Length: 329
Image 1 (tube, one colour):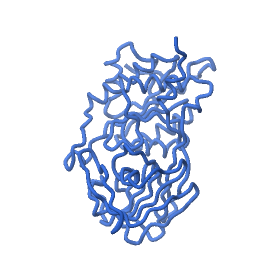
Image 2 (image 1 turned 90 degrees about the vertical axis):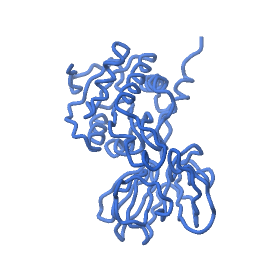
Image 3 (image 1 turned 180 degrees about the vertical axis):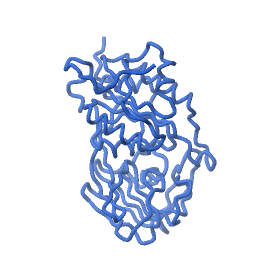
Image 4 (image 1 turned 120 degrees about the horizontal axis):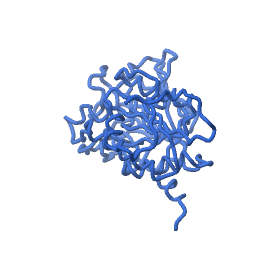
């Protein structure tokens, strides 16, 4: 069934708006063939979203504005959830089946002043959303491959936390600042990364995903957690990173770091150099770098002027903190 247009006039007394963007193409890259990465199929993603929506009904009243994704995930989820869902409307956007859908939907939700933006996908989905809405209050539900930033708690719990945060008068207390990276390939344009920017030797994008350590030249990593997967796992093996900073890594003969390079992929990587970069730092890429990968996907052919800037941007929901705000008894 068709939903009302979110551009309709709204009363100040209306429940807060939560944006929802689901990526039907997340978790389908080559790491399913070279490792043991899970495949999150259409039905499982729809079930995930249905649980997310059900969780939102446990909190204060909210309404949802969703991208009508090309895979029909949100519509499937509404059928699964039946009546256990907040009011859901669809954005007036025609999906193209590309990552542009996420970027445009996020920008539209920024214009609508959504209180929070829920994404269902992996780190690439988050990156595209941030390109459309750089200062979003993010609730990224994990449904991708590495999920270095995305939230992996049960979807029902995440939905409950999202509703609590969106409806709170001081919602900012539930969100933590994320360090982000801006990449200028040398032509004046810029792309964003929320986890890492990695330089590789081979001059081709191919299947895009990174999985071979011998290809790695250098990396700038913005978000480091001991539980991370991918290049972020290598960065975590080099020690804790101060809040608001990034870590530069030059790969080569030196310190050996054992890391989880992908689901089912464990390896030892040699690090020749690493150092901490504060926000505002800019670093040029090494001449040996031929292609630049953003958040695990080869995307940019390097030029001689390519550089990476360390900055701030979106904020990430602390589900735990939101749930702890509920009075006991």
